[in-house]
Image (cartoon, rainbow, N blue to C red; front, side):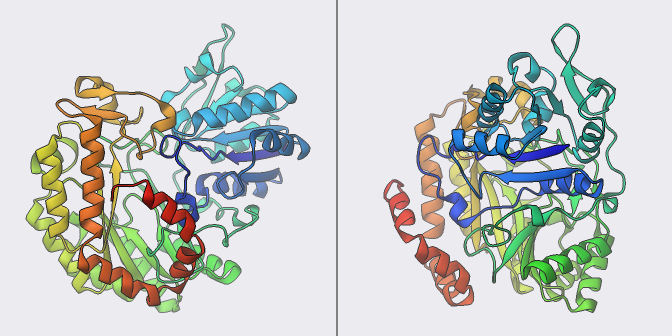
Amino acid sequence: MKVILLHPYGSNWLGGMKDISTIFNLMPPLGMMSIAAVLERAGIDVEIIDCYATPLPLAELVDDIIRRGADCLGISTTTSSFNEGYRIAASVKGKAPHIFTLFGGAHACTIGAPLLDTFPAIDCLVIGEGENTMLELAQAGFKGISQIPGVAYRGADGKGTLSTHRELIKNLDELPFPAYHKLPHYPRRYNLPLFSYPTAPNTSIISSRGCPYSCSYCDRSVFSRGFRFNSPEYIVEHMELLNKQYGVRHVSFYDDLFTFDRKRVAEFCEIKERKGLKVTYNCIARLEHVDLELLALLKRSGCWQVNFGIESGDPEIVKQHRKFLGLDEVGRKLLMVKEAGMRVKGLFMVGLPGENEAAIRRTIDYALSLPLDEINVTKFTPFPGAPIYTTIRERGEFEENWDLMNCLNFVFVPHGMTKKQLEDLYDEFIRRFYHRHRIQWGYTQMLWKSPHSIMAFMRHLPEILAFERKQKW
């Protein structure tokens, strides 16, 4: 049995413009690597093709899959990469119909069994966490799939149907570490966002699954609600492996809620500090978790940057879409992080339902008032698995073009606004934040503090300048 797991490129970044993002920010496909590790531990031959790291034209990619002798092709996609993933699957089926094709990932989990009704080249879907479902499918030789929990398949009438729900993995420490060795160019080809790390090589880790909160824009279709996590010992051992085997010196925890379980964070910090593990890290925190004791623990254990989802600077918009924390309190908490000696990054959205120009300008002004070193501004996208999706067409104009649903295109326009207004305000947000002397001086200081970033920047300067000429920043 030979299983190939494929991460399609999804070359749909900004509606036809060249994607330069992966030059400076490429995360390893951790979910796929976890599945590969579970299959490998059971003695199943498995390979990973990450099209972000090694892009190939469609025809060459299909020939490569067939040449490798695949019995099963498993493709994991987001909403924006689904159509490209399907083109690959259909081309493989056209040349090698014996290869079993299955899809997993966020889009398969949110749309579910009905996907099979209109995409005939897909043999089945993995719904929910993929490790145990993929293992049971492979061990069964991809036969009798209707008896395996967590699988959507075609019934006798040809329509998609779900077998039964797969129970979530209770103890995440039972999973092996992701199969980093299955990535041919790891860690050299993978990198955190430019100037968002102090040293290289660097990489990403996910140490928990699920989220108990109910933000309107978040898709919880894969890991559901609740909160499960790796133990502090497991996390430190994971970091030790990355450091010793791959030379990794900095990691970014990609968890939605790294700081949710206070006891776990405290134990992690203490174990890491006691072992003297020389690996720094970034993490995401919720502002209500922040206090002086926690910040001291993070700093002593090597935390370099803390990221916060702020989303909006308009209190009414925040109340509509997530748990509300007073805007003055946000500024106070961010200042505490800065005073503790760590960088602060703010995560914002533009184009949320209910926003108008005044609300977005309040967000811009608010962001400029905060002690932030860096921001990430996404374009609100109503994903099928998010709570807001069910009523989104009542809130404005929605172009449900899967290829463009990547948080980098305005596919939704709130009532009373135009897409041009949103684009102009988005560009103004970026320009006003980064064109300030304080921010530019901060990046100037980073030039000598982060030599890897400046080398990457200079090596790809022509692509950066070409991109900048097309922007209004």
